[in-house]
Length: 208
Image (tube, rainbow, N blue to C red; front, side, top):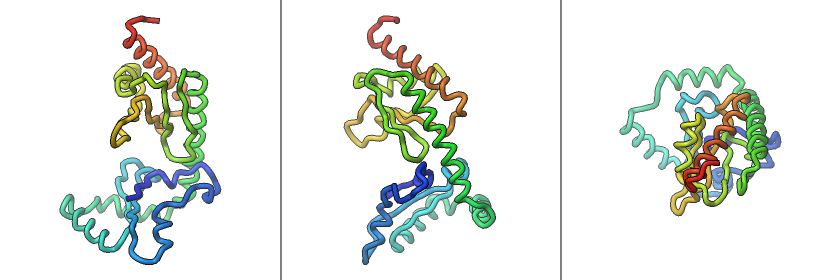
């Protein structure tokens, strides 16, 4: 199963710089397809448009269609008709290029703000697409414990441990750089810094 909701949002103009999808490799061989590929319009059209697609072996698709019908009959007809009209009369590829450029700009801003904090042990790689930055903090920090303090200070993230199937790394977090307006990114990072100070104080019992 290859789930690729963010693959259309790429920061490199040359698509050849990205690795091919598993599904495209799978389809280069003769015989039955092994990979089922899923995507969604919710990341490239509108968040509330929970309409997606799946590509796979025809027998698998038939089985999934029956499971879908048993669950909720079908997805919203209104949403599907609206999406059909959009794809017929709107340049979706140009739209994706526009949002990709904007998301790249916001990613660079968040990266610069995080580096300016110079947190000991913190590091990350700048993503080449998508909507999130994966931040690693120093080893002793537990981001699940940090989250309530961050929320109290008016900023939020997703603790990294929820993305592990076993033996999670507790010092990681996922940051969204597409939701926050650019002018508020420095504010958000300062609020995260304040939460980190509070978390360290809670571990030592000493206020700085």
